[in-house]
Image (cartoon, rainbow, N blue to C red; front, side, top):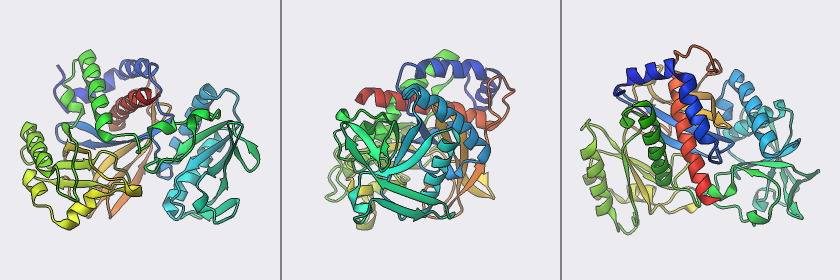
Length: 402
């Protein structure tokens, strides 16, 4: 049995095609999201995804070579999902004052235009337009981003120029977009039925465990090499302190199962996004002694989502560094294929902390050399396999709601 990281890396190097063929076969059985990103931590003893984004931002942090690979993958996926489509739109978040997010939109639009599509940006959120039909914005890197008011005519989504043949949703729906999606004929991907108003991190990691257990059984791997231990706690109210005793007990139980007794425990709002609703603790006692400021931070997330279900997850201490700063890896996938990525580093945090917080910076790296029938000796090949397994789990999430 494969029980160490070195053995797993050798397996990936020598059996790249076989491993990915297994994943491809399983992905064919579920509606894999058209794109996603996966945050991965690598410790001394394991590789573990710690978050999966169904509507990823950050394509501006993907290198130019990988953007070209993304274009080809988008073209293939959209031709399969909406045969013959040419005119498509991206439906973004409403946080239009975030100039870095606008950089992401501009690059995502370029990637799709390079694939041969006519691309626009649309929104159904009347509040961002201030009575106008179009919002003209400038991103951090001085790209023009124009968002048009969208409408629905006979079940077809339109921009200002007319009917759209497909829409790519880039809104995580922590606040749901109030549309009768079942009556809309225009293909919208990923499905709008799986945003954070519905989705739970806990559910994702349960599916991920099932995927990894199956993968590990096939290739004789210790599944603990590829996942962080976790559990779920329901019925918590940080405002009234209800359920904090249950949460503290769960923290101590996960801590007790971990071989490294110095490991931290991450407590995450199950519907959290944007790095919100996360605390890092040593023990259940840290939960019981939270002050009001700490409880308020954990109580409410983006768009006023109240965190009542919590993911309690083993803290994976990162060994990755960039300029001596602790770092973690994010892999971007299109059509279930790992095609790009970056390192998130944070000089204001230590190797056991939440790096998706104030002080973080991004370092691009290219993984376009990872291709079929090549000699795979780079670490990115391992990260790609982990990210694909996580995205396969996301496919099971989507299948469950459709």
